[in-house]
Length: 137
Image (tube, rainbow, N blue to C red; front, side):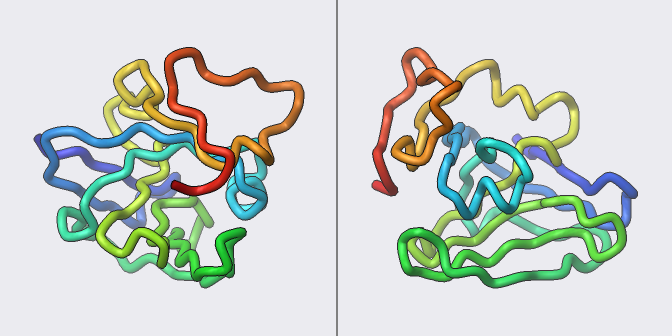
């Protein structure tokens, strides 16, 4: 199945040809800054499956809590977060669920795992049934 995503202004589009993906929330402070919220929601897919189909995203490299580079891809016009490539996961890409098309931001109604729960704001409870990781991996 192909999942697709795009930015708010429609300048950048991408697709990923996958049968399934890992639905993950990340509460690390890098993701909090990146999203402007308490976490990012992600569809984690094989990096080789992701293809930009329209436009050219801008990138910003940040050193995450892991000490490794997190390469953030975003629309150069509207600033929408699109996806992240993490040096700690060289074979995977984290598609930002909010940028996914066709109501896929719902991530099939489930969360498989929460990362960096040590940084999760205290007003949020763990997602029932999701694996809880204090950090990454």
